Image (tube, rainbow, N blue to C red):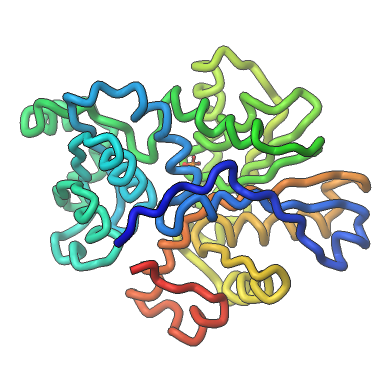
Length: 315
Ligand SMILES: *Cc1c(COP(=O)(O)O)cnc(C)c1O
């Protein structure tokens, strides 16, 4: 698979929709999905400075699921600098057959499978010690690339935008992207994060913690926790048809885990008059399109559906 060049700065696309006109708002999509066909925009941004500052004599070890956007981005970033990488993958070795993981391997990442019980320990010091004994020359990177450096990389999204916007809306997993945006925007601009997982209220404290790492004490951000549709990677017929409609209107493919839920939540908030007339809103398309592999493999969507949203596997 070719290692396409990264497209930066990512394009900003105006979205035309009668409903936006009716609410007197302007809506733009920041196309971080176009940075690379496989690597999720925000995952790459989160890794950029971490990898740039990393001692290339040491490898990097991190964690992810069998369709992890983070592991793909890490494999890519390490490959670019000739840094060895190890991915601790949740699940059994059989999942190795999937295209996400084989892409990681093609990029030189060594995979290490951890059963669900073990994977649960991924943030525990004891487990890190065990891993460090097996991989002594590796630096351990928290799942999702949640580091101080990540905030700087994410902040560049704001620097790239030439527009005086009032709100930026993003999907939320670990909250790192939300924190990076909040650290960078001006005080009169609002950042709205939409949690992709259930019971996400705990993330508010994590975002605050991350902002503290940047010496930023800001309260111009919010986390919406009611749009997860039952949990991480859970979906609904509504979401699937929403994504289809979004494609028909804008010719942009969303992913089912993060950006589909985020855009659908945005429209619900818009219809509930959460955005005053005159608002200029940016929706952040973080990428993640390779996540459809998981939906396809588990037969949660068929090929006709995928063709209708113009999703083509990149391999
Ligand atoms: C990981 C990911 C997110 C969530 O980013 P966080 O910084 O972990 O909150 C959003 N969108 C996509 C496509 C992702 O891969």
